[in-house]
Image (tube, rainbow, N blue to C red; front, side, top):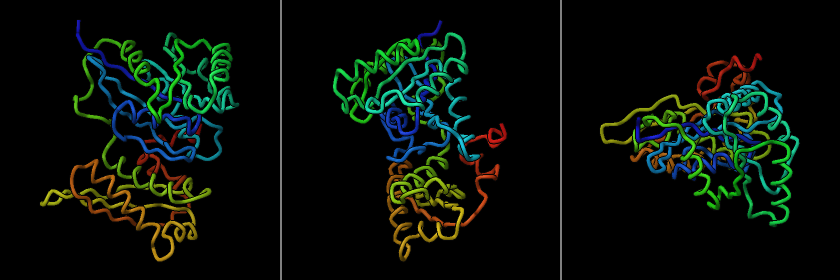
Length: 304
């Protein structure tokens, strides 16, 4: 008999439902990028939190949506795979959007794809955006559609209801030793976190469709004698004109992205960071297995 508990919490939902924000809040640090754009998260990212004698391993999955491109297929496959790993699955929906077609698709998938007796709870997010009567009606409607273990009213951004959800999750984890050191907050290579950090800054500055047609890879990571770190990255875009947009007038866009990314990475690494970013045109990067591997996705999922 052990006096510690440890388990996985899978966060699923439509794009932009607040999964990354919730995980970052639970962990107490930014381990998953957050933007106002949908489909920000591409790979499964694990954040680690401690609640009493329990270690909670949060799996932030890509949003579930109708697929078109190879990248879409791999992202959705990663999301369902991540859901299957959870001792508890938390479905996030946005209070102001209610039960969408996407939510209905996920509810149907929950009944077909997950393990028998796997605990599934509902977290209605952004509750500060709707009135109480609408919230109660939504809660009843969705619980009539699916039998959740529990329902939580939260605001991942403002922290409402997070403590209650966290307490529930800790109480429902299996007994066992912790999987990670107490001071570890993520199970993601720093190279990937660095690439995702730069991609976040690009997404925040670029508009329309371009952010979805680029990817960032960390190609070099060198610790210098003075303790600083040199990080080399490549931003891949699919068209020559996209390269010009990412660079910006006189290189102003990529310069601003580099400064913002370097500042955040300096805090994460705990040392001075020298960041060097190149932009390259690679028209078919979405069909290259190496690009998917770098993002933590399985290219074979695009063939299913």
